[in-house]
Image 1 (cartoon, rainbow, N blue to C red):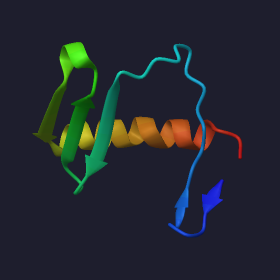
Image 2: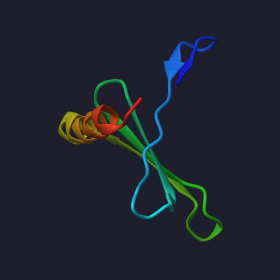
Image 3: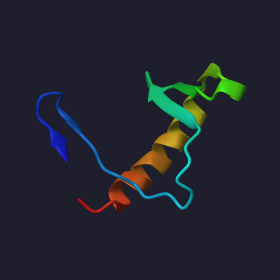
Image 4: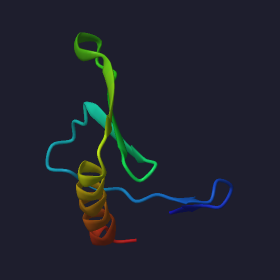
Length: 69
C-alpha cells in the first residue's frame, strides 16, 4: 500500500518461517548492513561490496515483484 506522506510503498511477504531475527539494509549502491537486536546476539555490521549488494537487490526485486498488490 502507498504511503503518500512519506512517498513509500509497502508490500507484505509471507515467509515460510515467520521469525526474522536479522535486519538487512541496502544503501549507496554497494553497502549492506546486517543488524541484530536480539539480547543474546546484538550486533551491527556494514559490508562494502557491490557484488553482494547486487545479489541481495536481485533477491529483493524477485520477492517484490512476486507479491500481489
